[in-house]
Image (cartoon, rainbow, N blue to C red):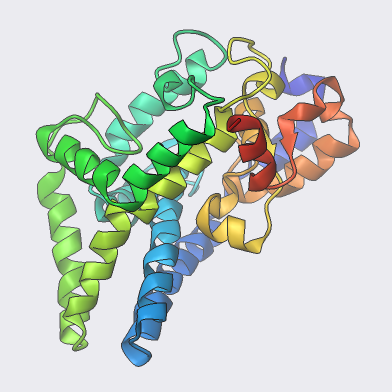
Length: 301
């Protein structure tokens, strides 16, 4: 399937256009959200705000990972330089990740999606899984077992949530500098202990939300080994809470992303509406999920 099957040249040009303003707004929104979470706990420190902070920080960490993904595609900003700088320092390094390594790995996913050569297959090939198996996975995530394992992988050069098996530790000095800077900013504001919320979220809710995101994108789809993106991936129509946690920054429009990888994330919602009007999903309505409960009903039996 080609872009030209559903889009004319003007539409391709329109949807592929990058905007530095829209990109800057997205990055600013994500970091403002993070600041608001820390501020809320600093002002109202109690068990409820602490639990909510860990939940929503996990969603924002995933949000930074998605922005790293966009920068890796060179889709976030107009220039390659801005994508590299922002993608590394404001998106990847806070997650102890490496945008350049991720970009190389992710290219292989797009090149081989819909085939047995897809390097990301281990993330979702086993779905659907039993309810007992899924509960065990969630328990490992919530209790930090998954996060600790991934953290050990990062420091040993074995990759992280976004990059598995192809990373190395060369980026860690810069990544640790960014995290120390975050700690220092909080300490200067008199709330340095709140950095622990960032660490706990990184070890618990972030892996949990990343898992659910991966399931939604390629788990229990119509046919993992079909080159048509409407069969090996899915788009999930999400509500506001789901967008905060499981699919920040428009990553839920995943069938559109695989259909047109050159389209920036902030253009995917509009592209989705146009493709819907052109009958894009008529070939396989199952490629469109009505929320994450719908996704999990297919992925867990």
